[in-house]
Length: 114
Image 1 (tube, rainbow, N blue to C red):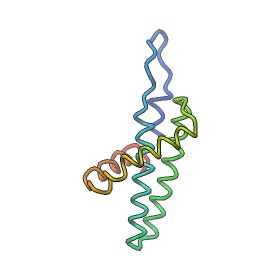
Image 2: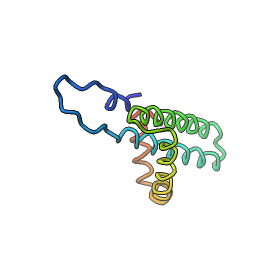
Image 3: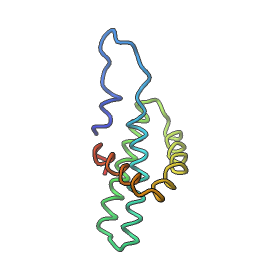
Image 4: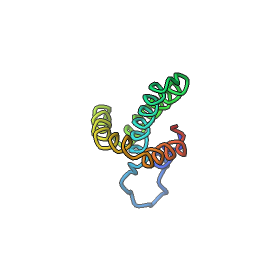
């Protein structure tokens, strides 16, 4: 859960409050989508074992997005809406740009979500 550190770390005394960092939340949602896409691809290739790994990663990423969303004050309903919006924007790009998809998966692996 390395992604949660940036949001949940306490602010030093006297430090000016900044807007919470949404990047880990957005990455967790992106990882949910990318892992789901990878699972579907593995299933089509007949790799049930690989598909199950990516499905588990997708579930983890979704859970992390929920936790980070709560830390940001985002409701579960809004998180679901955000994922739907991101799906519309991100999945076509992930499917049409292999380099972009690989970059997302690499960022997910670096964040412990793939």
